[in-house]
Image (cartoon, rainbow, N blue to C red; front, top):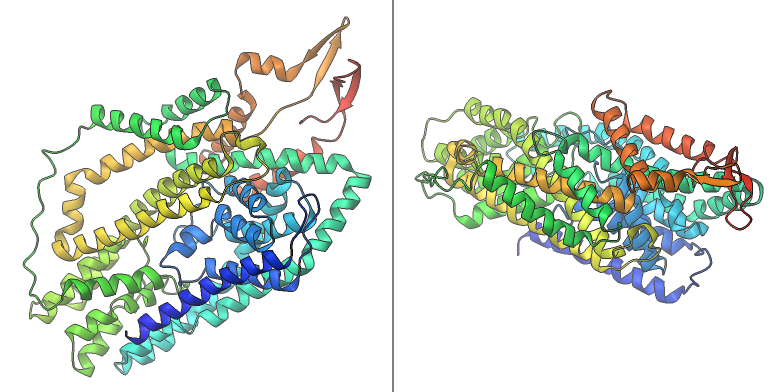
Length: 593
């Protein structure tokens, strides 16, 4: 086993040991279910480390795609704090806000990981109900943007160290620059602040909530109302990418079907129905494309590289593509690191090695899974060059710069815009059962199912497109696009995504009003009147309003989030007429109930 494999194995072993320790903490600190969890220092340390691991490279790209998601983060924090069921429910509720969260081009519109790890810790530590998790966690997600900017700025220093190693032809030095030098710094800026906030913050939040409960209970009611409305923001963010082409009606079909079923549905079943509908749509609108998908001709490889060599390059990209992500070169250092086994195999002299390292240390940025086809193509070009073909540095860099943008757009749309939200929806449904809106505890099977679904995509699709890129060389992307398979996949996924988002409006968005009037001795309550027109009308209108603000008016999601919280809190002040359920008399109520 070489040095790199040992380092990865050690990192994975340490991570597993941390999980074992977390279970020990659960047994050492049993808690009752009706009291806040007393946060101890060891719990806080583990939670901080888990947050760092979600942004680290040690889990084969499942850190950012799995551990970073609040559904999984809440589950892990719940295990650490001795309330796994509540942790699952809290994490799932927080995750609704980030269903449409997409990080593209180095931007980070909020921090789901911080909201999930620290938000769940503070909710459990303060004794706040699951219903209030979103309102507490949403502002925390905004703070993560500050840490992200710090990370992206300071990590820009490290590629310059790699430049010096490249000048010397030091392949291992370039590799170390990517996966070693950035990690202590990332541990400091991610783990330590969350440790301190979790340890010191729970008591502070608990005290604040006690004061609110004694002096301004309507504020707490407003936070609960805001939490139900914030779910609409996550769905609307997703619709910003799904409401395109001719597949948008499936959103309303999913909404209507779920409403008619009373909202008490299993989203896994709905996903199966949606997948069948998507298949029928693609079949009748585009056909299966068997006649168009002619077999792409594979290039005649010189035979300098083996399948194992190409696989080793993919493994380095899979683990370390974002280890030293930075504003200056984005994934440039990660790209060079992935090429190190190829360079070591193809080139023997110092000058050749140095030149190869330098041409791959330049700016590069794409989606790491679908975009892997670009690396496969570049590996093929490097092999042809080493075999004597007239392929210049400009030709190789031209392929990289020309393909990385389109592959990023396609990859982000498929992975972050469709695969992850649908997998999360299914995982949350399995975790919380059919009656999602009222669930206060959940099953760990939901997060585990999400892990399996995402791992299948990240590992399976990632390796498939990487290998296809290598086999077909520079014609790979053209062959993939010409076959029409990718376009049919995107259309079908769009149908499924819209269908599921419509179901989520009913399952997750909570908005109702207790406002009512007495006229001539007869009571008229507004909510039953709205329900008679269309069940779940207010949640649907709220989602569509937020989508319109996001897509048509280009209002910032952060602004919308703040407005929702303010509207929820202020709208819960008892100013409006309502009907007392017991006496039938007119009383003052908040606008939202």
